[in-house]
Length: 149
Image (tube, rainbow, N blue to C red; front, side, top):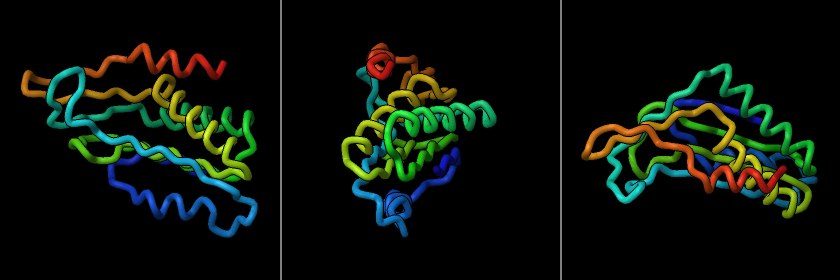
């Protein structure tokens, strides 16, 4: 299982290819790539800055992936989350999960993303024409995470 928090861009194709490399037991890979939006809450977004506490963030991500591995049969997983200054269209996050069967891969990928959005200590600040604003937690993200309990 690969968990990375970094400022630099990542190559989605390389990361996904690496999940199945050398493992003939992998039957499917499900992935999600999150991007910085150019609009949010009805307004234009010029950029976003993501902040975190490194030790807390790593532990939270490790716990989330471990919970997914306890629920579904996973062969491997990759979670890469970027921090620092990002512009619209840039990648923020990759969650990719390899499993024997597609159902486990899809479910685990969605679970990891839902929990990452609600339980990982990242703070997002958007730059807008009206100034900077912190991105508030969404009720829909909490609702999505609740279904996994």
